[in-house]
Amino acid sequence: MARSCPLASTDLTAIMTAENGKPTLEARGEISHAAEFLHWFAGEAQRINGSVIPSASADTGTRVMTINQPVGLVGIFKPWNFPAAMVTRKVGAALAAGCPVILKPAAETPLTAIALANLALRAGFPVGSFSVITTGSMSNTVAVGEVLITHPSIRKFSFTGSTGVGKMLAVRCMGSMKRAGIHDQVVRGLVERVGRDLVSGRGCEEGNTMGPLISARAAEKVRTHVEDALVRGARALTGGSVASKLGESFFEPTVVVDVPADALCMREETFGPLLPVVKFHEESEAVELTNRVVVGLAWYIFTESMSRTTRVSEALEVGMVGVNTGKISDLAVPFGGVKESGLGREGSSLGIHEYLEVKSITINTAP
Image (cartoon, rainbow, N blue to C red; front, side, top):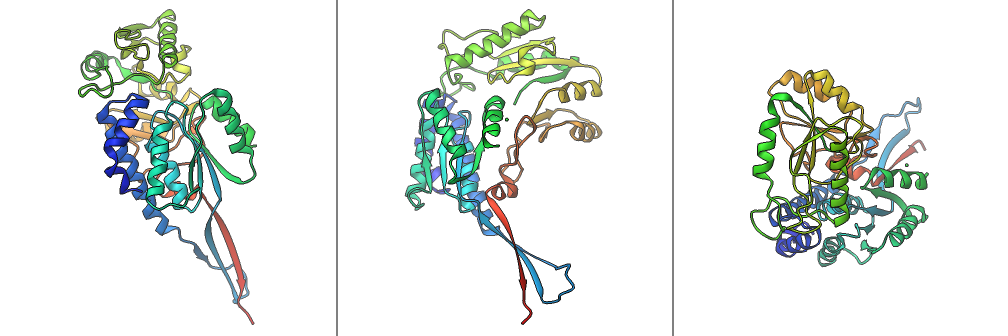
């Protein structure tokens, strides 16, 4: 299956751009990254080792060992923002662990998931090992979710999506905000780069670096967050409205400054091209502001100071930190957050163990 993704890259890229809107170059890169997850977990499948543990018993005939076994059938919910990579990071780990999967992709992006499931069949996976259920309405989504989290045959449930839905699912099973803290001196340069580097347009047209949002409703949410910030005293330095000439799902790349802590964009995930900028003067001020929020997936630090890198990275209450880079989703790096940003880790050597049960076996070898 990992070898099939690059061979089908042109088709998968076209499907993703058509249903998600991301630029062709970005979609092509995601297909490559999705294939890398499959290669990674194929290797991890060969390293699902048990262990032999020295017995604490005085009986010299006792031997203790552990083995890892598949947890069983897995139900997976995935969001629309990474239609391919989010599939292979979850499904690849489960299949490598020996677990069949039922995947419920986001209603906005089902086609990429279906295409990947077809590639799995063509690669030789048994029928039923990778199944996809699609939904077209919220009521259907709720009904399918109810089955996936309550049916006794499904032994594990993996979900990536909004915090609110995650809490609801966690309750049924038993319940990433983006902003920037910037020193006064670098705000002007940031605005100039946003205007120069972010080019809105249709994803299938080369040269565009930002496509549409997933829906007009998503664009409306961005508009609401911008207007709320402005009412509370923030200032928009660039953008600030729907890019109506392109379509109702496009929103101008927007930078707002002097954003108060009680603004919606500081408390909720916007999921759109809005960058709230909060100025700070002292390092401790930036850390305190960051740790005040209830989420903790990833934060990014840009600094020339190595000592500051160490101090701030250790002080931030998050699952991942990127220093002078925005690329933290490496195959070998555990992906996941703390607080209300989730439970568990995906990717790395830890990802496959989410789908394994450890069994201990104690043997009396004495006659």
